[in-house]
Length: 528
Image (tube, rainbow, N blue to C red; front, side, top):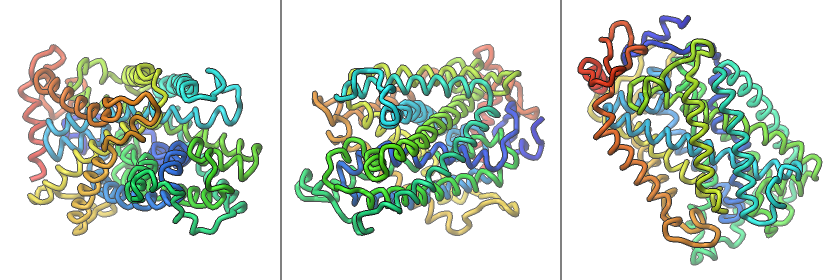
């Protein structure tokens, strides 16, 4: 049974809650922090930051945190009022109308699927270093073997997350919460261990390792590229709100979880990076640009201790992919119950046994594997796929913060005024403005066609270098064209998910629903 006081807010969207409320405050926090996954992110692309920016790339960490905090604060205000499945999709729909909402949901869904593939690839930088037996393809001595083996390991992880998510949110929450606890303990222990073996002063974070030479002597250019490593980590905090329909007291817990997950990740990740760089014995070691912090662990702490911490990173990667998969399911489910996706009625079906949308779990897992397989011959897949995921996330966030800013400027956004719920008050407008500026700047930086990001290994092709622009352009234009000419005529809350006060939906039979579509339009105007 879902609590009426929690589900009343769903009436504004025309929904009734089909999901089971069973997640407590720590579960929602764990979902947010496991999506960010500080151990996964800091280790997965540390080789990229160190190789292209030297230890001085550390400064991108606090810069990205401040920028993402602006976005998180805006999201926390939204979560206090609308903690709902498919958070970004429904927020954009509420603020900008159903066309903007669909595009935001589409981009976020693609971003989540790409993120599953990209994050699962982090196994390759961890498992073979724990035990050589995890290198199933070749000996890992060349980039192609490493890339193919990474895909094999990633496929096994995606199979696991698919099965867990299909079984139900309670099992997912238990595994995720346990994994997050292990990750937090491992992160603190790692900080202490690295602090005990430092050989460099804190000023090491001003060392550029000569990386500016590759950019005509400009370290700013090198820094903008290397900073992608930090950009990769601090996103996904909206997951806490996306589980709102399965959480207890989500109006209060979701905003706290969003902000706490981001702040905790910043503090822990910043200290890991700082002490990790202070523990580097040879700043010119070529291994830093290949394995990054994984090499530092083995070199500074010894192979045995290093492997123990790599086990913690293995757990962090696992629960991170699990959380990303969970968030992707909620996006697909939220769009499907609006009949905004092909086969919406089937995708929106909630299993009466497991109380979760099973088909989206399987479908997303299959798509994530397919995305890996079509790139199996590309040794540069790791960085390129990762960057594509980040760009899509930033764009989908912009499709929330920009409509929110427009609503504020028009005087149509009213944050919740209920006591105890999060609100930015008068700071809302300047924070929202800065969040939009930050999002636009980072999107341009991430999508810039750099060979070291999108075509790092030969053979070099122009379409690989411009893959971010091509992929995002095709995804946005192609997806929205399909929506505009085909799917938008069918959009409307499915009868099985409609609130009792909503008119019955006829989309189950494939006809256009004239009663629910105006309701969706009213969602944007209800802010007035």
